[in-house]
Image (cartoon, rainbow, N blue to C red; front, side):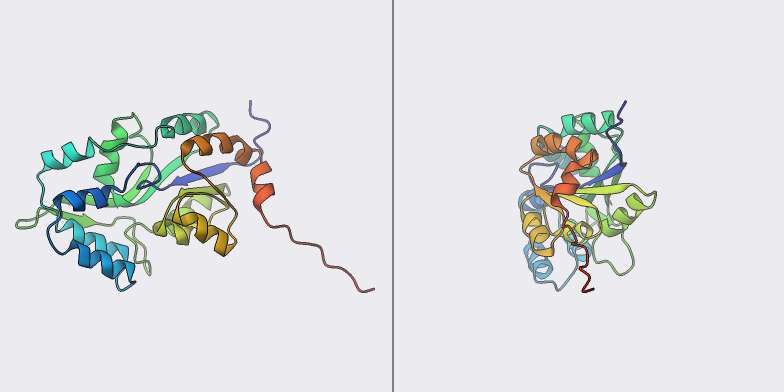
Length: 238
């Protein structure tokens, strides 16, 4: 019985650098990327192109066989406390959806090693390409007017559609827009400063050990009450 859990929540969780210890696509490009991917990265960082265009071009420059891809992914790790966080959220009947501007194949394979491949996922789709290209990227979760491969704002809107509150757990630029459209944020790295500057209700975390400790306080309402600005009542002049 969870009488103290008065408000239903959904959790949207970024993957690269949040669940995973390192950014998967960056690690693939460092090892298998042909010349040209750095220029695309610079164009994205300068705002000349969106992440979808950047990643599509970069994936087209990956020079690797499937067995090399699998071997590389099998050497990548996730936050050691994430499985316990998922187990606790499940116990508390709080759904988790992984929302990523990364690669679905990579996320499935990595999470599969931990028995977590059942988590709902929104990410870019990695598939074999017609030679001479080896790989191609499609974006089944893109949205009109959004330059990201996965529109996390649309994912946030879906999560809130049933009336539940929404928690975002993330770390970087791909989470900035969605952070403005959820009820609370567990923030890492660059997302901390964005939430602070934008006045978004958040707590900083270093990893899922912190998130695991904070989750019950989020669900009972005390964490949100502590970090949401209070509006003072208007004072009458009469």
